[in-house]
Length: 473
Ligand SMILES: Cc1cc2nc3c(=O)[nH]c(=O)nc-3n(C[C@H](O)[C@H](O)[C@H](O)COP(=O)(O)OP(=O)(O)OC[C@H]3O[C@@H](n4cnc5c(N)ncnc54)[C@H](O)[C@@H]3O)c2cc1C
Image 1 (cartoon, rainbow, N blue to C red):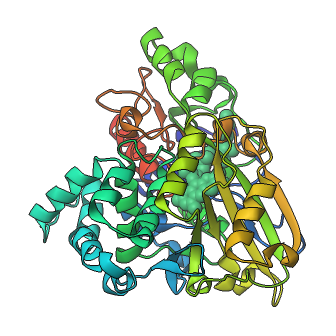
Image 2: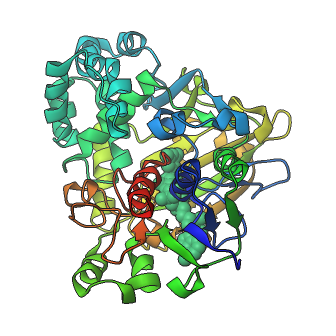
């Protein structure tokens, strides 16, 4: 690496790769330095149980990636990306063998929600009809909204807490539980704002775009970004951890796909005391405990509908999910955790040997937890699918320390690059006019610790690259 670059990106997560792609698209000479031996950050896949079983090590399901206005603007299909849409985005089973199913169609979803059918349609129809236009705003493509007044009311609702919103809008367990499961992606206690925003966002994405995943695993998305980058002359170096700015080859701009704690270690000497103090005060959220399973047969779900869904939320009623998330917020480990589960191999035959299956599952735990949740995760799956444990051929668990060793951005097991409450959702890593720049000229942060936050969407990388391009112009 003796060459001189216009820009160097540190870290090859989806945001780092998106930043590099945007810089290369504008004709800049770009290199990506990845500390690990494989690229992709949170979007990596590998055979970590038995041969032929391909597991997603981090992200699995990509409503944000599929809807991302930036990824949509790139020719990723020409570079090997193929999206798979399960028959239904999401199922949410309850005790007694019934499930709420989030279908692509709002009408079909509502039809199975009993007395809450009309309320569900009133809540989701206006926002879902305008989802594409709303997404366009993020990349500066304003469009005329079809339902501005209804959307304003959805906007106000999204600022509420999920428990309050679900209990005021819905009467029955099914619709309440479905909403609570989506809201729990926020990692916030469900009586805390803006957890409702996540419930509305994920439901809307399910209806408007689906919850697809890349054929072959999330690694295929990272590989497609890398292949496109290399086709434009961008270079990627793996096994190249950056410990200080001195490790970076000659360049005019450096974009860091890292979180505030790492940025402080790597580049703190170039920043002001005020900026460094704010980086030190940055708050990380709860962590996750994850288990990947290799199965002899598909999961024997009790409830009809679960076999048609790529993702299954396990936690039962709103009250039960809220109690579990609340316990995590207090630093405890719920006996019956809320579980996010994906069963990609039902829809993607490349993921497991003929007739066999993979399962990806995780639950929330306190940041830095060393508690082994494997037994509780298995018991929760078994509750809704009796006979599940008899089908396990092999499994691999990862606690917060394992996850952080695998990817240093997962501080204490936090998968969102920082807590996503009001104090940090829109103003990460700290309140300042341009969150992607730092006090040091030419140094930028482009990870999910900047807006719009966690998830595989590449938008943080894209926005940071646009800021760096103004400097490079
Ligand atoms: C278990 C799990 C499940 C998830 N599920 C989903 C999901 O289903 N859908 C979804 O959209 N999102 C999901 N996510 C979140 C998603 O993976 C992240 O939000 C996303 O990957 C963030 O992208 P990023 O580019 O900001 O950072 P990352 O993807 O974390 O990438 C950072 C990269 O930088 C590298 N790096 C860090 N420090 C250095 C250094 N000093 N030198 C060189 N390289 C360095 C790391 O090795 C890593 O490759 C999940 C994450 C995990 C861990």
